[in-house]
Length: 163
Image 1 (cartoon, rainbow, N blue to C red):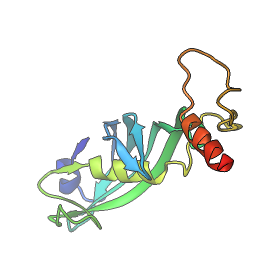
Image 2 (cartoon, rainbow, N blue to C red):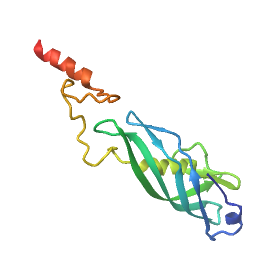
Image 3 (cartoon, rainbow, N blue to C red):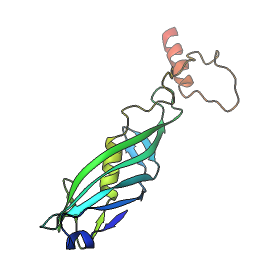
């Protein structure tokens, strides 16, 4: 998502509103792939006398990852507010600042950063997820299509205990 800041540069101090969608690539976080739906972004921006652009707003999206307890699909609603300054002619490669050149401010880095910061520490498929309930692979119900990823490890543990 990009903002045309031409009018804001011509009229410092006047706020301009914006809204739109920003796509975010899948993120690898703590060994899990987190998929984030397109973010709805809305807010306002204005310039100062030096040409720096202040951007304030809010983002909303839904993130998807494996449940921390049972590895089933889980999702979490993500909301975060942001208030950042884009430095005119700053170093576009510097990860410590937001910068822009010309008359366009790109919000992709800002939206990705604020969406990732708002992710839950643990994704749960439901609030009371008990995790893997069946420790004995023989006792697990035989429902077609359901896999128990740690059943093989349980068998190895039992063999080790017999020795």
